[in-house]
Amino acid sequence: MKTTLLALSASLLMGTAASAQDSVFVGHLVDYTGPTAFVGKAYGPGVYDAIQYVNANGGIDGTQIELTQVDYAYKVPEAIAAYKAWSGRGMVAMQGWGTADTEALISFVAKDKIPVYSASYSAHLTDPEGTNPATKKPAPYNFFYGPSYSDTCRALAQWAASDAEEKGIENPTFLHAGDNHPYPNAPKEACKAYAEELGMTVADPVVVPMAPGDFKAQCLTIKESGAQYVYLGNLGGSVVALLKSCGTVGVEANYMGNVWAGDYVTIEASQAEKMIFPSSTPFYGQDVPGMDLVTKIAQSGEFADGGKPTHHYIRGICSAYYMMEAMAWAKENGGITGENIKKGMYAKENWVPEGLEGVCLPSTWTPTDHRGLMTVAINQGSYEDGEVKIERIDETTLPRRDDWLGL
Image: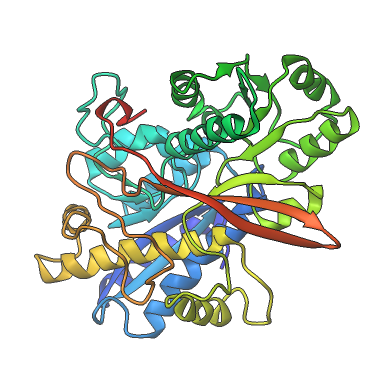
């Protein structure tokens, strides 16, 4: 299932044989050993298992997806090297991963007309034509399932402002805590602007490394700021370490994680209390029609021996299925090429992949707006009496403001 760059040469030798078959080639970047492996090992198998499940059940109307997965350990040069090798092999689409590498590849994939379905939800990937003058680089071939980091942070800021009003907190303060890196930084300015628009004070951001450590110094800075609402821009071990360190020095704040920072594993490891985090799918086992298909996919792959996927795994399934349904449209409309797959992404409105009703939320992409989903569910998770308890406490659908496109 896992492939390193050293294995690429062996994969390339198979290209000629594969081309003689009714198949198309998709590259899959994952992080199973780098700084984001905590969630990469949950999301990556979701993509992989979904594609293998479809292959085992007839493929894309008979066409098999030849999938090569590379663990690039969150290193941008290795991601670019893998992309170049794959594009030379006739790749029609790519399942990507991180923000730094996905943004570094924007111009490459646009030139080569290869759609990329990333696990980076950077809003910088959502303006396909550069419609917003503030957009740094148009991203016509970039897609992702779910609201952007900026929009989820805006939804959290909206929740915080409402929560402060209910609690009678005057002049509530919002603070961004995360590494100085493209992923945590992606929503920083957008969220700051919206929090201020909502009447909140925004404290200076606190830099917290992605790698776990002793973060008492950062926590003391958070405490001194007086921030009641702290946005967690990192994930996994870093978030766990920050919450524990802040508990040690007595920080009293509402912690709001980004979509990768909140899951039952993190809540259990940190023994968090009332951690707020967004989601764009239900959690595994919830009673929705599409959970049956999710269960079949999980039990045919990564979870064949049992276990409980996090919702990151389910988002990976959604990402793969949107790509594969666009491929099915492309096959009926000129063939499965990158350009036709892109057109397939615009063929439907309020679109849910067949069989995943209630799992993947209705999404719409257009040639001028790649913000597929503007609805954000907000959850509260706590570790109580030896178990994790998660409840949905709010849901909001943000407006498609023109000034937010690409930002």
